[in-house]
Length: 272
Ligand code: OGA
Ligand code: MN
Image 1: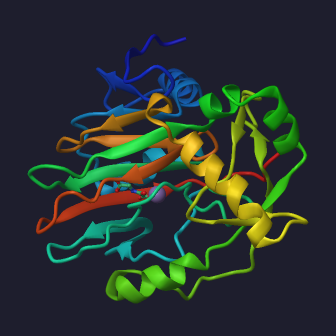
Image 2: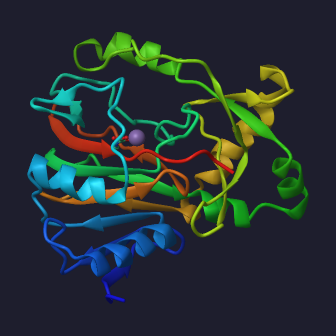
């Protein structure tokens, strides 16, 4: 197996991998990258400068591309979502803790984000390990959560679409979907907490009001600084995160500057 040049970014989540050109890797290296993603939850590759074709080709190694029903596609490449903050825009896409597309019956597995245009300062992305969050729960709360499912909904995108009207559409809003609160990673079996403040609404069989206190506790507990890493982008960098292992958060601290990222999302399987 290929040995990767890898540096962990924090105790529980994130690793930067160097000496790799993603546009030119063999199957062995890809297998090592896959293992690294499943181990670290999110991995980063600097100075890749992928063309749209290279981005798509690399993404297709992971599985089927999930064409976003909400984001505008990059011109000529509908598979690539444009994650854009315009100069005068106050609300940033992903500017809250979330898991991409947890509202889908088979939620996105990975997201591959490629930096196109970065602000002069700010615009970091934070990631939190939902595996570490699970591990540190008490045995009592683990046992309670193991038996729960929660509803997830994309309804909050309706509001986002009103604010981000030109490059974001609410047309895709669908029915809520149910997932286990504790999931097992389909490849490694790693257990992780799978609720998030952006899309989870309530526990199955509980009212919204009954669910709120425990959900709110989990939202803030799961993203405590010890379970997180924070990544500062540089030109051409590519990040890949595993939505079944991490939550992420885009820092909205570069007001008055443009930021443009290209994102491809990979379809997942149903959750266990
Ligand atoms: C996303 C997202 C974070 C960022 O594209 O899903 O949350 O830093 N992006 O742009
Ligand atoms: Mn996101």
